[in-house]
Length: 346
Image (cartoon, rainbow, N blue to C red; front, top):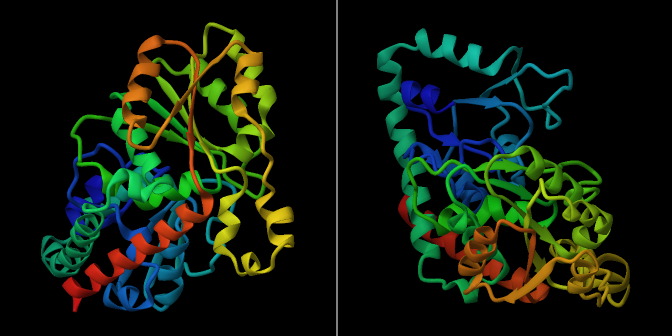
C-alpha cells in the first residue's frame, strides 16, 4: 500500500490493525482521520474521486461515514478472502484478488502525470493531519486521560514488539489518538493484533498469551476491565514460561463505550444494564496466578511499561480512570481537532 501511495500520490489512510500505521515514517500515512472525519463539513472538504480499499471494512466509524458520504465516487475494494468485505455497499468495483499482486500491477501501469493530479488533494489531507496533531499537542497526558493510554503504551514498545488490543474503547483510542501522540519513528515496527466482531471481548486475554507464545519479541495487551474479567481463565497460561505478557489494564469500572450512545440518558437502567459497574479488584485475579500488579497513572505509564518488559515476566499494569471524564475529554479533543482542521481547509 505504501508503494502504491507513493506511485499514485494518494494519501494512505491506514487502519491501526493494518500494519501500515505505526512506526513506518511515511509522510503519506494519514493518522488523524478518525477525529476530523467525524465532522460532515470536513468530509465534504476532503471529497475523493477514487478510493482504493484493501481488506476488511475500517475500524473507524468516521471513515465509514466518509465512504458513505462519497458513495458516488469510484470505490474499489481489493480482497482475496471468502467473505464479502463491503457491508456498507459503497464499492463500485470489487476485485477478488491478492492485494500485493493487484497493487503492484496497478502501480506499474499508473501514468506519471496522474500523480501530479493527486498532489493537491494529498496536500489537503496532509494539512488536516498536521492540524490534528497541533490541536492535540497542548493537551497533557493527564488531561487526555484514557485517550492517552494507547499512545503512551506504543511509545514504550521496542522495535518488533507485538501489541494485542482489545475491542471496545482500547482499539478506538488506538485509532483516534495513539499516532497523534507520538512522532514517526523510522524502523520501529509494531505488530498489532485484535479480535474483532460482535463478541469481540471473548477470549482476549487467552489470545494475547497465545500470540506471546509464538512471538520472538515482547508482547503487550491493552485491554479494558470488562474484557479482562470476561476472560480471567486466560491467566492460566501465565504459569507457563513460554508466554510472558505485559497487560495494560484501563480500569474505569464498567463499559464506558456505551456512554457514547443515546441510551446513556436513561438512568438508572443505563448504569445497571450497560455500564455494568463490577467493583472488582483485578489484582486479586493476578495474585491468584502469581502475577504482580503495578498501579500507575497515565503520566507514569510509559516508564512502567518499560520496566515490566525488562523483567521478561508476566505483569499486570493497572491504570485507574474515570469513564465519564474519559468520554468528556474525547469529545473535547475531537471538537478541538475539527475546529483546527476546518481553519486550515477553509
